[in-house]
Image (cartoon, rainbow, N blue to C red; front, side):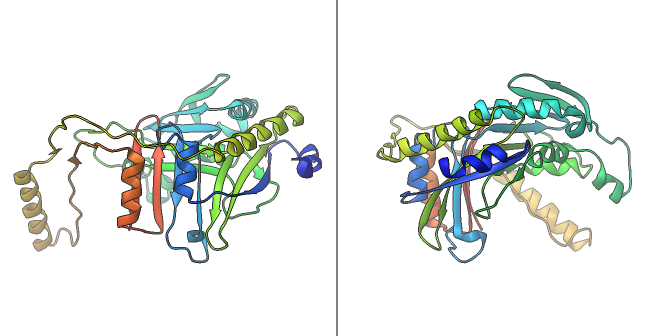
Length: 327
């Protein structure tokens, strides 16, 4: 930290100063398992790529100690602090509420969170007007662009990490509501990651990047918070990977939200629409529901082995565990 002290002390409010340390990481998924109690900890995420070519596909990165958790559904949103740094960011945003949250119909600032409701455009408007209307993207911009980087040592150093649901399209398109919401997940769950671990596969090097968040407060406090993050990574890196827990006992049967007969009728209806010229392509889907007797991170490990891809992810959020390997 001493090498960066002068830069940090001279930085202006609203800046992020990335501090980088090289570490012996090993496999990113195993390092992530150490940080996240084998993927069981809430508010953790991992993004990987098995296409280790030049470009963004050459990096794997993640975090288990983000500063903020952002979530929203429809017109409601919440921004929740997850650390001391997160609370400082909430306070910083609160002092700039008129500048950053003027789009809100209602907004409440507390010490550890911001909650509010955005103004939604009612009625039918043209496409250009609709795209410029206030929506949840304004919430994400208010946080993502509240700070600027003093330097950028890697393509990924910090920012919003997480997932958007398919229903997020409702922010831009007026669509009929779903008949039922089987999972009940929010429209988005994102983390403002002020610290990440990163593997540069092209050069075989692992790094920890901690961004010193400069607000209007004490610079020494910001330095101390960053040092705590480095100590956290260094301490956990020394431990062995936690052991998975195997489930024992009977399992419920698999199920679906759509029966085989109902699905076949959907296919027949789609074929009729294609023949009639109403559509030329459609993607039909149904939800499969099966018990999971293994640790979620073990399921992800098998998935990444069966289908290694440029886009692999594992997230454990307050509402769900989401994983994938696509395409």
